[in-house]
Image (tube, rainbow, N blue to C red; front, side, top):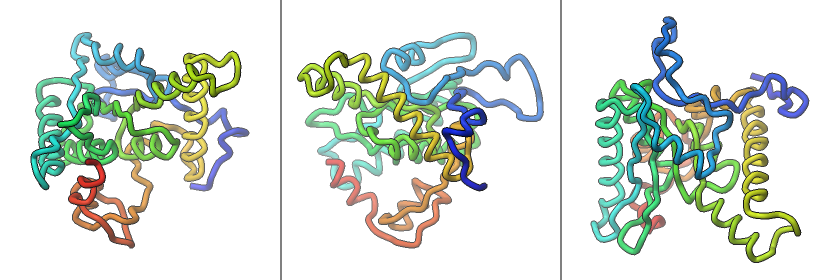
Amino acid sequence: NPPLDAIREELVTALESPIGEVRNLIDETPEHCRQIKLPYPILTNEELERIRHINVGDMRATTLSALFKVADGPESLRNAIEQLCEESAAATRQGYTIIIISDRGIDAQHAPIPSLIAMSAVHHHLIREGLRMKVGLITESGEPREVMHFALLIGYGAGAVNPYLAYETLAHITEQGILSDGINAHTAEKNFIKAMHKALLKVASKMGISTVQGYRGAQIFEAIGLNQDTIDKYFTWTPSRIGGIGIDVIQEEAL
């Protein structure tokens, strides 16, 4: 598609991101409405907690840990990703319609699975298991802070993202008085989210995509610096002309 102007053509753009089970697209039943309609894909901490505790009818949410043990050796990250994928499939079969992939709980014994690998690996595992349409995925991570971080997470399947460490950083620098006078933590967070949403639309519009819903899971990226085994396993269908590191080096960097 030709690029569009996300500012002048704002009328045809949308940040709405429905999340939950996607039912038969050629049918129409009351159950089709059983999704959460998010007005935008970047969630505050409060909004995420509302979703985390939802339990209405057949709409239920669960949180899965995206951490791996530091002391478990060179296969620790690979094994943790496999476990996360298996847990996501099991949760979906148990009837959960929203899965939050969270890297909270980092300490001296636990390191975070890189958020993009965690999201993409789960996304593709659920596709292979025939379960992807039954569940919505949310990333809760301290890692994303720039627009391309959010674009990549959404492009590889995330329905929403909660960048909790970015919010804590904003609160910290407002306490130090680094920002302009009159800017408190709440205002800084609000401005950050607004800027990221506008930037997300601009990134998508370069590919002629006018909605976040159309961008989600589209994988319109090329991998640079990853070997083919890693791409095939965790970023399936992503093209690459330049090889590079594997999961072992990614583990070293995460540690």
